[in-house]
Length: 194
Image (cartoon, rainbow, N blue to C red; front, side, top):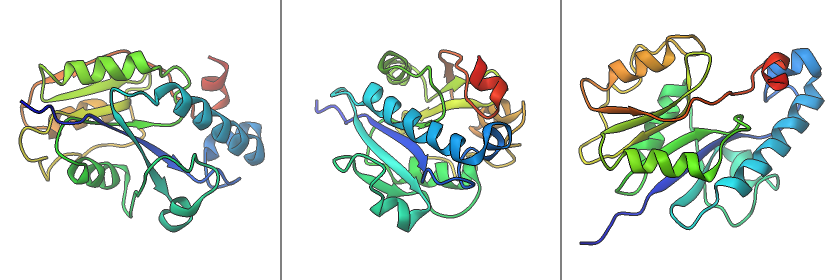
């Protein structure tokens, strides 16, 4: 039987001062925060580009990101589109080609290809997978997609709170969920120090 191709989508923003990592920018300056993000994304992409899955970038803002010279030209780009984080991730998960798909953030320095491989392996036994973050959110969400992605996915999620992971899992309506490695995202200078 033909195995469907695994899809990994990395959500990125154009690394412009004052438009990316603004909470970090309040601590270290907007230019330094944008510089950190640009170099963090470059390192992350080198780490997670792997023949075991197809790697794409979900870019924001849509038009500038699709044409940006900041990101590697060989990687396919998708517009994130409008709305909150749940709206954007929902579109990415529903719009990906058939098969398992994982979406990750770009501001997690600890991500390695092995973490992504564990997430896809978990989707062999579960409907959904999350990579929890220390703040109650998550750095990865993945779906096996053997059934339609529920339109209620991400409904009622309290974003940027300690409830984001629990709220999202609840929005899956009883589908089986796996948790993989807990990693640290970077929103503030304290996170960066860790």
